[in-house]
Length: 575
Image 1 (tube, rainbow, N blue to C red):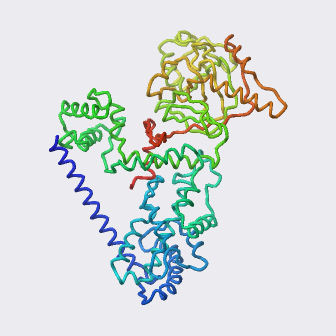
Image 2 (image 1 turned 30 degrees about the vertical axis):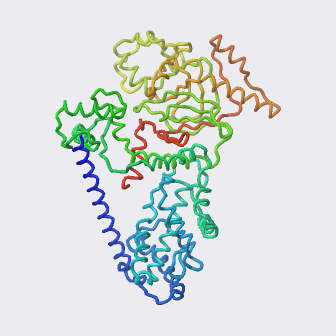
Image 3 (image 1 turned 120 degrees about the horizontal axis):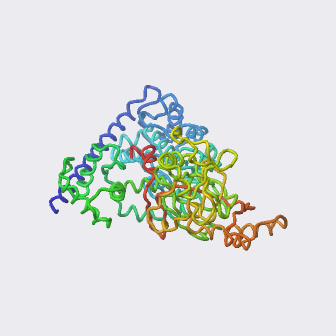
């Protein structure tokens, strides 16, 4: 084992050395290109003799550099600029250098660089903000007298630092995820004036952190997650590891990736894919024992997800989760229901505190529960279940073709478009493939799949919250088991809260009526079906967060839908 570990360690040292060489070469190329590749539109070098001359020349050169960006495909030399329009705005007046004076960095420039260097504390990546290029130029200023006297280089690095900071402002305020149907921020586009105001605050106060912190979402869960990042980073190792595809759609790719990944863990002494099956099983069992998983020697769902959840992957999840919070309203409602699908839980929030918590059962990966924003508008006691056509096609129709008596055995009724009952034995089931012109209804009662309470809310997916007749499922740790709706263990607490809230709401208004909790309790005892309109609709957020902060630590959940992996490939593929 010592020999394997040593070999394994040496491989990572070689990788690190290789990366350092690549970075150094990149810096040298960047330096050369910044000095020479200007297409004749901006000076490539201008050496001055005094600090006073530097102050005189820099504004004019900055003006030329900024004006040339649109003509150079949005770049300064070969470096892509992130906020070209905002740069035009902030430099458009005096073109003065913002970060240096008389051949010296200002203290606030050092503060900005320090902030960008530690950007991971905000779920950001330093190199997204020109950190390597700026650091390289700063080092040249310290080591090269000619570079330190170059007004062009001082001008370029000033614009790069401004551009990096402007992008930090945008990413902290809005995040990096594209606006979609879940985005509830009203300020999804920031105006030039906003950027200018934040930049001015930083320049005047010399407090980068305070200004940037003021841009973060005022959401308690966001700050709880962020507060755990430092502790996570202190012990994190960001090596690149092989991703093991799962479920197995490509057996060849899977059989290549799995031994390689176990080799990276130091468990196998070779990454060769044709490992003996017995040896591979023993290696899997050893890994499972190390990670306190069920040591059965089989690379199942839990084992593969553990192999893929590296520190690097964890940080990507942290970064994505912080950005997901930024897509919520700038100010959350005073009262709302929060469902985290990945965490299998529901929370009722009021005045920034959790009133109660409930386990939930959510959709399977193939019938996943949707993310959505809505408001609970109605409750139903002892509801009937109208089976969706998608479930009828996949599950009921094959059974009906084999046995028309299937519905009666399971407690379902077949209804036509007039809601009249149809005898399933008189239907030619063989002619239907994708759906049927009938409704399948499960009557209300203790055996109903929806249990004794259903919570409706407007949505295009035809999903809802509800009780269940399979309450034993809440004891399972993995609860992605439904067809898409969310089953709530503490449905009674949720319904009582809504009823009490309606009572207070109507009393505050001084008019109107509401359903009393005592009445609902009696209906439940008598097993009666009743529709209960919710007077003050409770906002509902169903989301998918694979990590969250708690007591200074970060808790990670299974990416059961593979959503964060897809987002990582889309936004962080080059990281």
